[in-house]
Figure 1 (cartoon, rainbow, N blue to C red):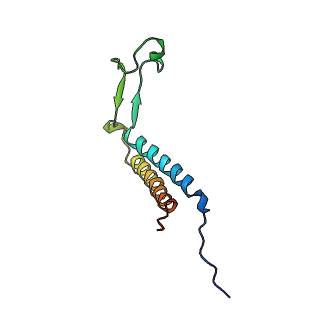
Figure 2 (cartoon, helix red, strand yellow):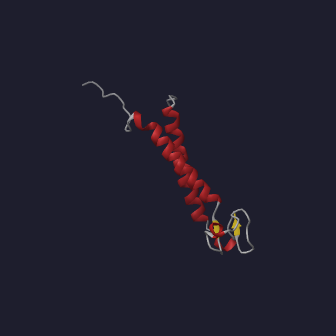
Figure 3 (cartoon, rainbow, N blue to C red):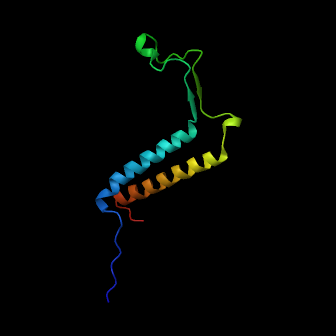
Length: 102
């Protein structure tokens, strides 16, 4: 009884597509980890009616982090874990697609 050769469970032709998809999702989840809150108190399309989209009014507020009462350690750990899984597998498929066999 001859041993069966080891083969990839994913077709080799899918490596580039999986790399792009997983790295994109990982970067989006990472971005959502850093940009937790973006609040608009004005109409979202006010610049279409003559306003300047680059001028912030007094009622617009951009926050890069949330306040202490809105933070959740479990949510941050879960978001970080999801981002790291997608970035890790995306990096793996990128290496495999370029010919670096790991």
